[in-house]
Every structure is written in structure tokens, then in C-alpha cells.
Length: 199
Ligand SMILES: NC(=O)c1ccc[n+]([C@@H]2O[C@H](COP(=O)([O-])OP(=O)(O)OC[C@H]3O[C@@H](n4cnc5c(N)ncnc54)[C@H](OP(=O)(O)O)[C@@H]3O)[C@@H](O)[C@H]2O)c1
Image (tube, rainbow, N blue to C red):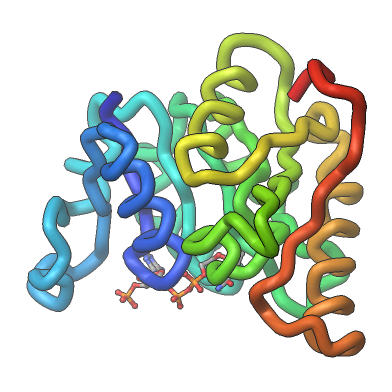
């Protein structure tokens, strides 16, 4: 499957590399190709999104508005997987901004609740960590769940975009456990349930 990753930092590289290892055709969309020549499959953001089945947005939260100023036309209409967080913000997500600027995009919040260390090494103490996400029901939800599985994490759907604050809460829990409770960045959360629960 053709996938675009916007932002070739820690999160973009971790997820893009895992998706590629899972067999996907991953194109990294960056603002300056020359600075990212070390990375295979780099292209402009417009080139990366063209024809992509899903687009991961992995830029700093503070840069999202700037990204949209220049590339809203390129992101709109796509299945957008938004991993961005505004660290220290009232909300970690910026859904009102996204909904206003890319109104035809099918938006999901995913890969925003755990550190990149968990995305790179999702099995912790013998168990696969969970990755909660939210976004509308339907085929896109199943695709996003598959893309979470392809990274090696277990997808847990928390609801539609009205669950974005709940997803934020899980991110805040991860931060609290990592830094206030001393678990460090390589810790994950696992929901225990009878087998066969819907993801
Ligand atoms: N790090 C984590 O553990 C973690 C976990 C979950 C979620 N997140 C969230 O995921 C996002 C990415 O985090 P990260 O750690 O991967 O950040 P990062 O390492 O700083 O990488 C950010 C990337 O975004 C690009 N970028 C910055 N401003 C841009 C703009 N205006 N237009 C296009 N591209 C731009 C940068 O490109 P240049 O190289 O050209 O500057 C860089 O490749 C953040 O919102 C963060 O809060 C992070």
C-alpha cells in the first residue's frame, strides 16, 4: 500500500520504517529534500501525498498550522493519521484547526499516546503494548488499525473524534508514568480483556 509520512523526525522515521518493513511503499514528505538525502524514499510533501492511501502527520504540534498554511491542498481529502501533540497545550490535539483547514480529510488521532521508543520496540516485558486511537467507524478505521498492527502495536479504538480528549488523557497518563512515576520512556499500557474484543 502506498503511504505518506510527513515529517522525517523520530516518529516519522520509526513508523515509516516499520511500515516499509511490513511491505508498504512509504514516501517521506519533507520540506527540504536535500537535508534528508540520507533517508530512502524522500520526496516533496506534494509528491508524497499524491496517491497515498493514508498520510501520517508527524510534525511538531507547533508546526502544524504552518504545515497547513502551505500544504492544506495536498493533505485535504486524504485519510490523515495525526500523531502530533501540542506539548503543554490545553489540548494536545488540534482537531478544530485540522477540521477547519482540511475539511475533506478523514482524520484519525493515532501514534500520539506513547513515546517513539515504544513504536520502535513495541514488545515490553514479553507483551505487545497497546496503541489507542480515535476516528470514525468504517473501512478507514480498519485500515488505521492494520497500520497500528504493522508497527507491532495492538490497536484499541476509543471512539470517533469526540474521543480525542480521551486519547489526550492516555497521552498524559503516559507522560505521568514516564516522568513523574519514573517508569521511563520505554513503557507501555496494555488493556486486559477477553480474547476477541473488537479493536
Ligand atoms: N517523540 C515522541 O516520542 C512522540 C511520541 C508521540 C507523538 N509525538 C508527536 O509527534 C510529532 C513528531 O514528533 P518527533 O519527535 O518525530 O519530532 P521531530 O523529531 O522534531 O521531527 C519533526 C519533523 O517535522 C518536520 N517539520 C517541522 N516543521 C515542519 C513544517 N512546518 N512543515 C513540514 N515539516 C516540518 C521536521 O522537518 P525538518 O527536519 O525539515 O525540520 C522534522 O522532520 C510531534 O507533534 C510530537 O509531539 C512524539
